[in-house]
Length: 218
Length: 218
Image: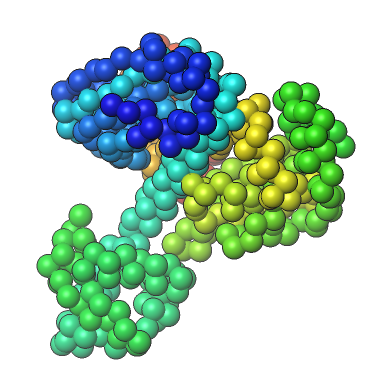
């Protein structure tokens, strides 16, 4: 394991700081489906050496809703939330596969982060990335029903026009669904990048009606 | 204005760093309903000297959904997102009242944050608080329909029992609604803290049927 893989700013730490982080750190191999954190404990910073991890919350119906996923080289910081006082939310961290972790104990991590601007700035970047993911998740949740509604409308149009090439603008779709053109354009682009359809000027070509239908039925 | 009001760690900056932040900063008074940021520009860090500001995103139906609100002494950092590369999401920042702001230009802020561990750690705290708020918002959005459904069930029970004191357990409510007891308990506690009802062992006393009805109609 090389700490540089997880901390690109490793060389900006002093030798003593590097030692303070690496000295007390230890490896842990955990099986698939292991709960690493569920709000109570403060394990420390988790460096993911291999495997896949996710953070999820529960929906009112008890469904697990994934908020973010972490991969090799990523850092899980919510498991060190005891030293980041402002980080207050309930999330469950679970391994999706067998995973090898390197654990940096909370006090070692706190000591170095408080003293090192490069480390604190790097943690800022990670925090910003998690915040961006959380915001993206909010949009997905809000827009969830809208993608279904757009898919249903496209399939309906295809029956009406008796063709998979539809002559319909985003503006018209938006008017049908009582939403904004920007929302339709954005969701249609997601559909396109998922291979469900192809967009061109004034037309929408349906490429995968089966998947569009599945989307409606979800 | 005192920078200490916004930066509790101000005294841990060197005199040169304090000067680098305060020197190029300037004041701005803006009217109610002014858009301060909508994704494109990079104004810099905004210190809120007075007034109230909110960050919102649009729902698919074009409704504005408030993600967080900022008050006197708070710092708005999303308007400096150009220097925090990982902060990538669309949010609109708008004044809710007339507001006095102090603007720290992006380059000045970046210079000091990169050099100062205390400042970087303080920004980490702020970022953590925003992340926690975003997570809380996700729960609220997910749970939105559940609180309506609980309110409706309580009103229905009250008609059936011909009383505002209901002999019903959280477990029973959860079973009625196909959810978990924990979810019911948590939402009922919110209802209680909003004065809608009073909880005691085995009973639920409805205190404000009008508000419960309004909740259902939202």
